[in-house]
Length: 342
Ligand code: FA5
Image (cartoon, rainbow, N blue to C red; front, top):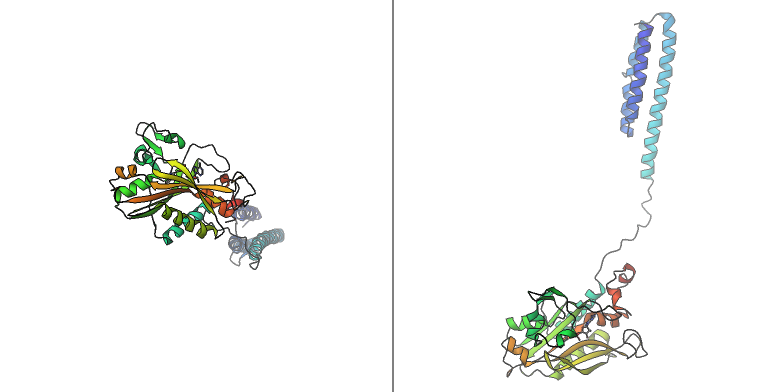
């Protein structure tokens, strides 16, 4: 072996080490690098073993150079191992006794909570729950409820049309569920129908274009207006406590005769005046009345034998009173600070 050849081998070893060191990504790879170059049978040891074949004068220089290289390799490997050790130490230094970040668990929307409470209340009084579609034909939304085409009562509920030709609308109230139920069941009937309704109403503190109603229908022999009043009073007191007052006012709906609207006393201002009750001390909750015999004709019920009452109450209005919410729009804005309170 000539000194020239050993110099070339030393240069190649240096370049090889730099290349391999650049690929090291973890402490396991740093260890492998050390073994490959500095190990007892490593590449440096190979070169050291060649020293003996050099002429004595050149042996000293080559030996010094190899020792220098060994020192450099060792420093590089030490630096790499130190780097990976400190990263591992940092990962291990996490304090597991620290309290965790709070995780917010989702829960029911306030309107869902109120709907569930309303349903529980009426179930306790012997009502079962019926459902109907949110898209209705005009027949179910109006006609079978004794609101013929051109009747001014159609304008009382500003309607969203899905398809005017096919006469499909978004239901403006839950009353069409009455018709579906009566078409499929003979009396006695005692149901509530909770659900979403849609009207082209201008939003304000008490009106929303999307809102919820709970329809109620009771048909049997001998059902009277006093039964309606008794059920509504029992409901109001069970939801709000024995202080709650209710009042019935005469009204008009083509599908009930006689018709009424009933209000609950305003628990937000207790009569002093607020935006929800408009200063009157009363909040309009629902339309109601005795089922018009004309409606019975559409579903083939014997109007001589059966009578019934019906009501359709606004769920948002009840939720506003219950939780003292001053504006209906707060239920639909999805502000997490508001929703987290329930
Ligand atoms: C009706 O919808 C009738 N179907 C109720 C009915 C059923 C009468 C059965 C007789 C027999 P009205 O349009 O008044 O009636 O609405 C009933 C209730 O829904 C109102 O008292 C109010 O509480 C609520 N409501 C109506 N429109 C809106 C709206 N845009 N936003 C929020 N709540 C509303």
